[in-house]
Length: 217
Image (cartoon, rainbow, N blue to C red; front, side, top):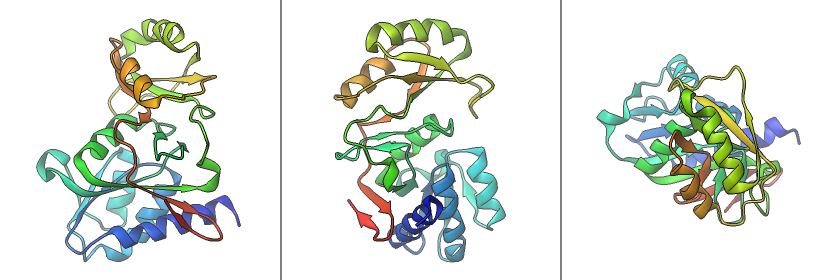
């Protein structure tokens, strides 16, 4: 089975968590793109969506799904998003698509966070995928130095990428994150850091792993 087909199967399975009249939080990325395609079939049964990125907003609107602002929506019942890595405790690394801040905000606002991945994203310890950190532009070098001091990892500026919030991304290579909750807290306290791509304090509630047999964790 191809990776795209595994992603599609996970995305379709996530529709089981969508209820009539629901306002659905929608993430960003290649697996979520399959979810939005599938969600289009339910557009007349849901109240709309809250989107984590301009990319997803465009796809949702093209599918005929109304996009609402989180400030107007209040708390959400469901958020569906992918991940770059997932550990056995459903803690995640996210931000490969540079939408980590809005994704973390919507996850925090949601009663249930359903994460859809293919099996390649499941790891015993987070860190094989470089950890994204969103930083305000003036703090890029400062934050990079603090990351080295705190983690021993190698920070690399994702040159040419500007987030929907107008900020920069630093990807931290060479980590083995055995305590993701503590690392998320430590890095978040560095001045200039907007968001760390660890979803550990608020992990996924459900992880759907696409493959020949779809697993629900």
